[in-house]
Length: 380
Image (cartoon, rainbow, N blue to C red; front, side, top):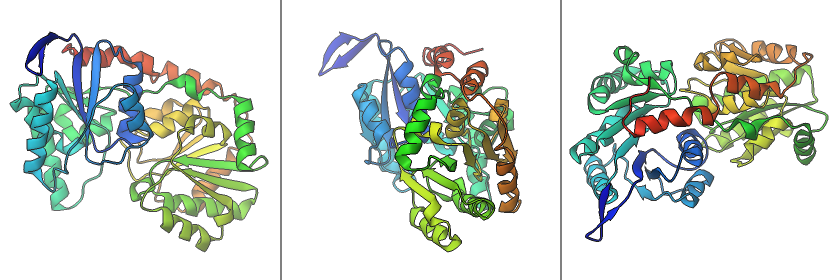
């Protein structure tokens, strides 16, 4: 196709995609985008991103290494007119063929700008299934259900629950489920790496319970600490490893002291070697209040770990032989007993990768589907 640069026409056969998302630190949406960009044909497709924060983490830096241009937008909730004006400028200068908006309920704002600027393919992508409360939450939900399907040319979601929450029940048959797939080979269990991790962390002889995620209320780590304290009452040779950063870090550290388990908890912060760390765990626990799709839990499943997940997490991971969905309204002692009851079971952890591939969550199985969307071919 013919584009202009500095007033001069030139031929560019790449399909240009602008991803709109909150940030590019580590985990979440930026991990999904990065996973796909690392495996898509970059001779055919060019990804750029527009984000709300100037803080870049490993995902942002890796995207830059792959040739992604990064633009910054103000929060549309604080300055919607400036947001629209700057986004128009980004789209105009980039001549994008696709706008892929990951903003959930309010994706229609960026997509409306894209429609006004003549972008032919406009994708609203739902990554979570939040629960709404109060009049304001219900109004935002209703607006999303009505406007997103009208502005977007394609609705994409990570799960049926996310489709229902962000696009409404009438869109269940119209939205395309694009799996939050991973490079499964990175997570294949390796006993030698397991020993190296456990030795480095000084937890060789402990039962190691791990979790990965931002330290914020939705991940429900305060409840996790109560679960761990209940486990610690039963057996003392146990360690909780928490991977992630967030606003609750200091509160969680204080809670650990209050519960008397601080010396048995390791806060590792953000890590780029999660695939290796998972091999050192014995159990993966995620008692989230809600999730669109728990990609960290999928990675743990590929590593062959037993999963203890909140019953508020979509059941797409129920294929994993060792997955259990437990109610978060039960006392923490209930979770503790369930977790400890599985420790004598034998399982070849390498089978975790086989299960993930069999159920279609390998990134290589999903690339063609995303390419079809970007090329305007409605996937079947």
